[in-house]
Length: 270
View: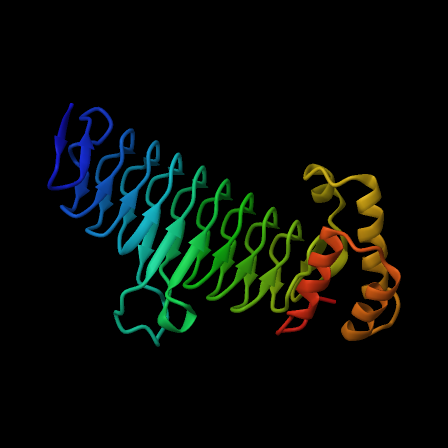
């Protein structure tokens, strides 16, 4: 084992393939595995224990955390697909313990979007997915094969986006929500809700997701009551929020539900 100070790499020949291309400024932590023909750019940082598959490209001002597994031919940190982008410095941050499968693309941010795209931790991003510029992803999210997020999309913790789904720019997908396969999502998806269709419409509460995330029966009943007020009482969003404020006990999950509704800019799926 010898340290290559110029590259900031702790080089282990059996872990970093000699056929990989690693630019001098890259910072590669101990225990990182890099496969053949992978390309790691000048301004990239990769944390301990992360695995980078063959033919993967990681470029730009990109920081990848610990113990991620990035499969072959992924493209991470490329310039955003945005006509307003003119080469300015922008960033991508990826947390820890993510699985990023084959041919996934994740792009850096733009100046208009705050300059950064963020992916949290413990996410499963399956093959051929796309995360566009300025997206903000939380933790424990599942994106199934070929799910695509346009720019500025926010996905909260433990949401599930099924395969072949397209999400419109600036849409928000709430905590523990689920989007059915092949959907077209053009409005916000509130937390705990199941949507499906083209365009996506509400099909009910994501009961399976709530159970898998350990939500108690008592809290599930409260979420069901909030759902009924929002979707079954013929009230508009403002009226539904007012009714929930007046009639429901305050707890963290319901407060988050109400906060999401208050901040809806594109309207919500109905």
